[in-house]
Image (tube, rainbow, N blue to C red; front, side, top):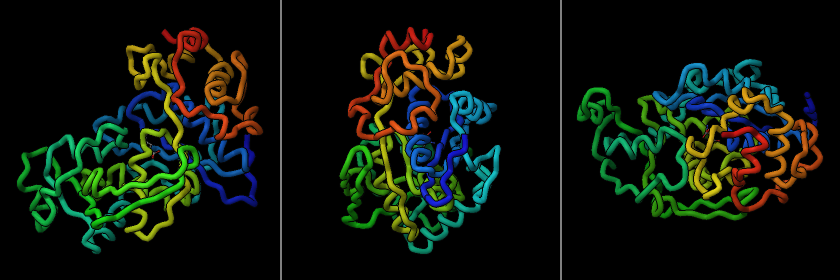
Length: 332
Ligand code: GLU
């Protein structure tokens, strides 16, 4: 299903984290990301975001590729198909992150930090909104002469984090493709933030910026739990002299009570739905119905949606895993 238009330079991406199996929420976001790129003849890049060890589980990366293909999505560049920006697996891209970190170090924009593990972990994974808590007070600003000096104060097995020194009064502004104009002073809301918990800078926040820029991604479509993190990423784009992509944050899929999907809401993993004998067309039909692009009960391939995938039809509220949806998809 190759619909690339050589005239367009649109490049979207699918960036699964192999920390767990893909579920309906991931599937909806990936379908939207794929359609927004493909309907204008853009290219789709698949990048495996596997820096989040020890949460990365063996076999999950391959399973994510299998699940996405089963659903009917494809990509022009990725770990299994190669491409001009290879490698497409973050753990194989550490030199790029080291280089980005070095640029920040040269400008005095980062420092090592030994504050609590909870703070530190928030920077290693993609931060979901609500995880951020209070603004960091800058306790480790100017405290250590080097990363090694900071590391020496920690018990074995714990590593310092690299924190970005937010310029005083810095304000970031962007026009989200779904949520509209956004504005924030990161110094007041989050404070100096963690870009990685790794000596070489290989953590979510720095890696996602370095990679999206290096892979010439023009549009980032992802869940709106990362809306707030975008401001931090914009500060990194600025500091690294890189051009940010357009951002489009779409609502998540939630339980009937409005909660983030969890095991107790039923097994919404694509692998489980597939194992229960549900056809991919049925799943895509439900995902599209959630987006306002299909009628209830439609059976569709992703490519059937190319001429109806309008962002404006997606409801502002999260998509809800109702009982009829569960019944249709055999989720128990
Ligand atoms: N890999 C991240 C996740 O699955 C997505 C990060 C992003 O799209 O920027 O949460």
